[in-house]
Structure formats: structure tokens, C-alpha cells
Length: 390
Image (tube, rainbow, N blue to C red):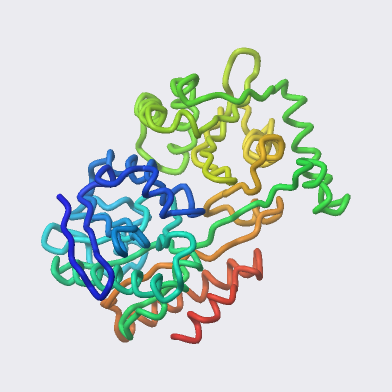
């Protein structure tokens, strides 16, 4: 169902599904936003059927100018999108009586406020303000929590003028990106001293000496082989998954993403022993899942070869400018040439007062210090703006 309302010169539409707007129209609005704001990715998110879509679209004279994807949860929030998990003892659990209104992506760890390229600043500001006001009202009407998680610096900069005193911004994570030189591994090598690159070269040699070869495949060609390898990795970190379930997850993705996803797979003979999955959007390759055969993964340095060195070669050969390596394992990523970009959580009218707010800020300070220890550049101009606001 679609609902519309007006505020000033802006017409606001609430989409009951991303399918209510054409893919070309939405992606033209999104411009150079990340994969996780694309029509296709939002369609994939809706297929998970654990939330209700209510995407907000602002138009001017019938022309879409800004949007925020929105998902309403009444329970079963994905672990790393659950404010009660991310901010323990500071946010209540999500229930039918106390739902979560989640703005931005609901998987992928990069959320944005979308503004159509070329939109004049006054109109863009009005549209974003209108979107945030409606998002805030929806949260209040539901009696639950309204939050936008994993926001980029540019999204925070858009939202800052419209925030209220009780709205809380928290640096909650970081995203690692690796810029690609047009000459591939040769350019990559020049970023390091000879001593630094020695360990990278050793990792490449271990891969070759293990008899591994690399194939670039579509999801539809190899999802059954990927499942058991992915499950090995996930079970190692305590996830309750099955080989069959993981294979089916990749089969589902293949139905939507077979054209813009490739698998960099390591083979010994005819047997797949490792893979890293990459999605393509714009000039960026997004690393997603990976899988390893534990009997050879460490010995052959499969993860580092497939996710970094083979990926750098492939990206340069195919005109991609960036590898998006997502969150976690920052030491490994930064020492292999990545830089960190902050990711923010915004909780509207946050229920944090007194000691609860002090705990949230202390945990944030520790995270920021940890991130800056890997890459001081994570303390961006926007990060300083946020610090000044608080």
C-alpha cells in the first residue's frame, strides 16, 4: 500500500514494497550510493520476510529527489541490527508492543540517505528534513524505537541540521575500503616497503605451492559447492547453520544477483577448497561471504589470496576502482592496504539518560580509540562535527 502526504513543496510517498517503484527510477535517485541502497538489494531484503517495508520517498513536482529505506520489525531483529544488542542496557528489546523502525539497510552494514544527483541544496535539505520528520513520527506512532544504523559520513552530514537534542549519534563501527590501482598488483605492491610486502609475497607463494588455481564463477555455477565451505566458517564462529541451508541461501541470491555477482574460487584439482563472494555495483566490488576448507585454508592462505590479491588483480583488469571489505578484522585489512571509514548509529529520541548514556559514550570512546589505532584517518571531519555537537 502506498500513502502520500505533503509538507511545503515536497510530496512524501510511503512505499509498502520497493517493487512499487521501478528499479531504474530508484537507482537513478540513488546515484552513486552503495550496493546496499540499490533497488535489487532492497528487493532481496524484502524476500527475507522478517520485517515490513515502509520506504519513504520524497518528490518535487513528480520528480523523486530523496529517499530513506525503512523496515519495521516486531521481533527477531538480525543480531547486528538490534539496538538492544548493540547498546545493551540502554535500549529495550523489540516486541510487537515495542517495535523497531529501522532506517537504511537491514543487511550489508552501509546505510545512506539518498538524494538525487544534481538536486539543489535548498531542495535537498527540505526533502531530507521532510523524510526525517516522517520517520520520527512513524516511530512515535508505533510506540517503539526509531533508528538508522551504519550510516555513512555523508548521510550523517545530511541529517545533522534536522536532529533534535535527544537524538543520539554514535560511531558504532567502521568500513574498510581498498583503493585499486589501474596496474593491479604492481601498483598494489608499491604501497608497501620491500620488508612489508615480503609477508604478502609469502602468502601468495603458499597458495601456489598448495597447488591452488583460481576460477571466476557465477553463483548459479557453484552455489552447491559454496554451501559446505561457508558453513565451516560460520560454525567456527558459533552460527547454527547447515551445509544445505547455506547452499540454498546462495541459490536464492543467484536468482537475483547472477549478473552482478562473481565468485573467486580456489580449486585443488576438481575440488573447490575456498571462495570469496563479490557483488558489483558501480565501480566497486563488495566482498560478502567467504568459505574455506579448514584442512587447507590456513596452510594455503586461501582467505588472503582470494579476498585481496586475486581480487586486486580481477578488479584492475575489469575497471573497478574500489574493494569494499566491510567491517571487522581491521588489523588484517589495514595492514593489507585498506583504510577505514566510520559508520554511525542514530537513535531518535534515545532512551539514554544518566549512567546509561555514560556507558554508551564510554563504549564508543573505546571503539574510536581502537579504530584510530589501526587508521587515524577514521577520525574524519564529520566525526569532529559529531563530537562538537555532543
